[in-house]
Image (cartoon, rainbow, N blue to C red):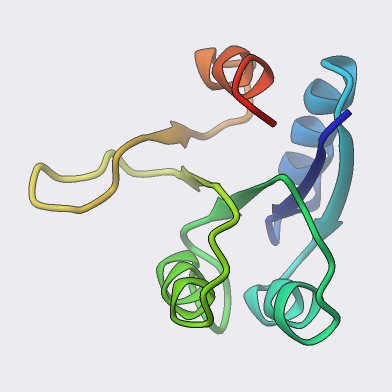
Length: 114
């Protein structure tokens, strides 16, 4: 069973993601802010197998959080959650689009090396 941290400020979306991921057998924690995620991962040194990270968070957004994690040499796999399609010029490899309907990403997350 893998541990996944969802970083999402909209409770109904976070709970929908939790429901689907737990149905796949994952252990899921939720935090509402990027700052909360950084505290858990960098200060408290909690270990997760993957992060589902909202791009549009209040305060530090998902891209800032991703940058700070990598700068601190934390290489936890990230799955970015966004309401927008990413542009061809972005460095984003893949993302899930809202709303939280079950998407192919769940299958790939479930069958990855988590």
